[in-house]
Image (cartoon, rainbow, N blue to C red; front, top):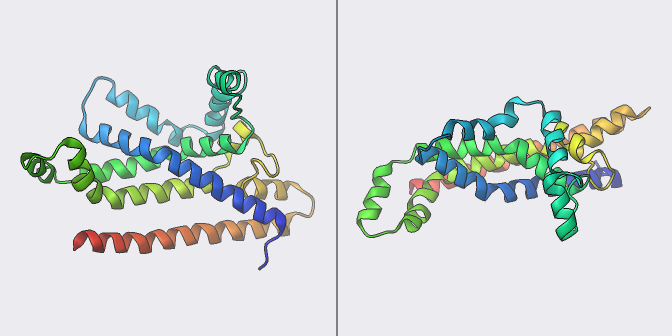
Length: 229
């Protein structure tokens, strides 16, 4: 099946948005997951609730909040535009942010569960041998939680590929700029005689998701074998 220019455009944009979404949020996901797993502090439950709020809120609500905050007249978006001449809303960068916000709880949850499963005696043994906190994390904790990080990355990537509600509310449905695969399917369904084009987009989405899941399964198996050895 040869792809049309519109399909290539939507596919390329979806991959770019999903990759930037995951890469941009991964360092924060690891940090927050570690804090939630290893630290007790006042307001921890509130922070945990805020992080997981996008899972229970309607995506349209999340998109509206992002529009209020990051739009040109918003407190953050207005400052970025005035100081750096950077516009977030109605751009592909905004689509990546919307996808990252919606996928972030899944990433944090997977990594946090992995951190909680690490035997802390191994870390304590490394510290008794003179290793500092940074080296312990890099040489002991990080390799052990690598499967959890991979799981979080794949979940976030898949969620980013399928994001619709927050994206269309925050950055609209602009061809070539914010029209990812889900938005392209929506546009085709709304167009008279667009059922065939929508079906092709759906097939592309399914193929992409399956490729990501199969690839992650193969990579995770090899990673677990390497850690086991």
